Amino acid sequence: MSGSAAAPADRARAQEVAQFFNTSVFTANASGQFGNAGRNIVTGPGVVGWDTSLSKVFRITEAHRLQFRWDAFNLPNRPNFGSPNGTVVSPAFGRIQSASSGRVQQLSLKYSF
Image 1 (tube, rainbow, N blue to C red):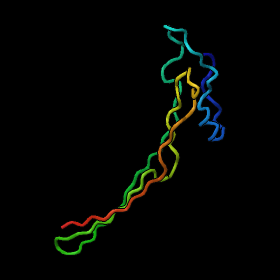
Image 2 (image 1 turned 90 degrees about the horizontal axis):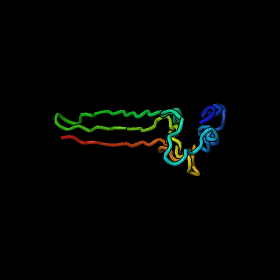
Image 3 (image 1 turned 120 degrees about the vertical axis):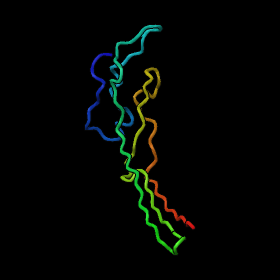
Image 4 (image 1 turned 90 degrees about the vertical axis):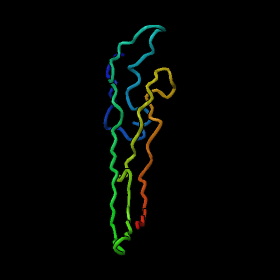
């Protein structure tokens, strides 16, 4: 490794996905040899995980209840990208190839007696 693996921070999201870090500073090792890059020198993209729920219980009679519940996963609907490919000899080296799903919501009713 020669130079810094950090890429400019003011790039568009599509550019970050296509090349998350500076791949030109890495070269493949000779067979049977160790490289000179340290551990954890590249940090992946951050994750925002706001999962929330709201519920309300309605009492119908003494022994009967109805619960209404709303759940939301990834509430801010932010794309959470996976880690970039770290295999130097791969054509996808430095590229992010996965992302979590967008906002998911569900409504539920539960009747208890």
